[in-house]
Length: 310
Image (cartoon, rainbow, N blue to C red):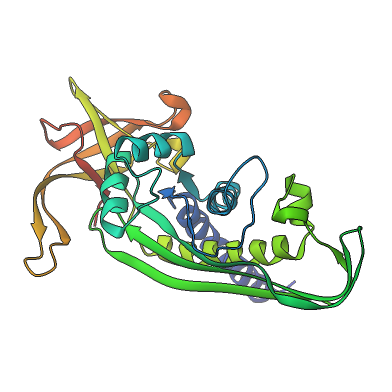
């Protein structure tokens, strides 16, 4: 093979290979956002119940959580911890979740994004067409199912609504099916096999896609757990994509800014107080936290905000 041709071939092969490390590195450094999914408020008046004694709102929220966890792109707050805080704030029974309360609770829980909303439609639409076979629960003909959700995604740091969308999925069965007696699903397989289950799955996928878009443009952050000697502990580690050698800026939150007209929080004044370098991402909580050393500044306190360098 002539030398010039061989050199050109190597160049053509080598250029794409040179680009691969940068892409891989970018993917490797993508950090997981921490998310809380509140129980959705059921406004549908459908009369349905989930399996495992759950309400429709609880069941839908669990479906969203499952999708987020299985994607391995997020750290999702455990439901028990979220429910404990709701009970402490006397919001659990009433189901009262607003952008302000979601942001406030999200900050306490150390999450960056809070997801909540309402189910506005759920179940069969209209009476359907066809013939029912008496005493069997079997209906031959057409049936339309619908799931509709009003979704809100809030950035907890500012209380800003980053996304407010209505998601609606509708599907019509072209053949006979089995009705769920008393509008109650006994188990997951039974629910997944129904027309309502299928449209709900599609609606949940739409919700997760919207959340992915928001999360991609939301800056990652963490918080200082404590400072001991010259070591700073933060609440994000290998499980979130934090790597040894990375450096982060540390900020302290100051006075909260309140809009004098609306009374809503506009965020707070933050001051940069130093910089830290990650030295250990695996030894604490199986990678849920990291140990850092001080590069600049000092006297860091619990709750100080950790951000990637700009």
